[in-house]
Length: 114
Length: 114
Image 1 (tube, chains in turn yellow, blue):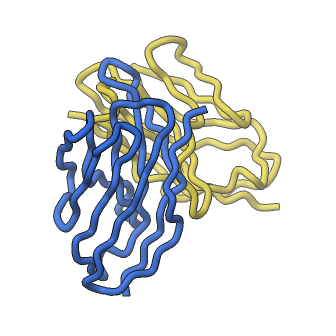
Image 2 (cartoon, chains in turn green, red):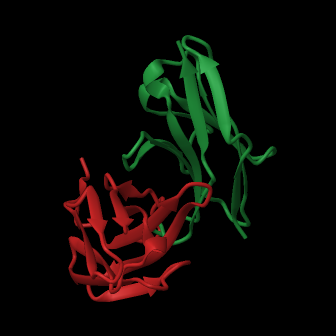
């Protein structure tokens, strides 16, 4: 069975400080892992994906995530937050079956203070 | 770039009306999905389709139907809209099985049923 847990429902940071959004997953198989971002009243946009290649994955807008199999984690980080990063972020696990077996985390709302 | 277009971004309908939500993708993807997004409940799969005229129920199909007459178009139908169907509806597409499962989302359709 698959599951994904985003450990924080809300994260607040100051502009220019690091961002850490935490995600743990559970899967019986080797999954693909994704982070998506959603700005208000918009669809979800892919930030980055892990598909069993390099464990450190770089995405758009300076975000990156590290796949740690031993810890079953896929945390999202960014060295320096920007006001435009304020959005909701979703950690997603998929069983490489064309999207049919996709589990979404509950989301983490990121607030960025000036 | 893959583009998934949801033609209606905001709709207001009355209880009992029939509602059509249209979704078109331009990358020849086999798989298409309809999700519903509600605060505190995350994304929930309503229906998906893996080929023209083929459809499968997702987690919450009650009160909805779908149509896929052409590969690029996937429609969600509310036969008789109710107030509890007020929500954000997201369409997505993906490549076939044995791929990563990455989903490409439209901008969303926010439906209000009065």
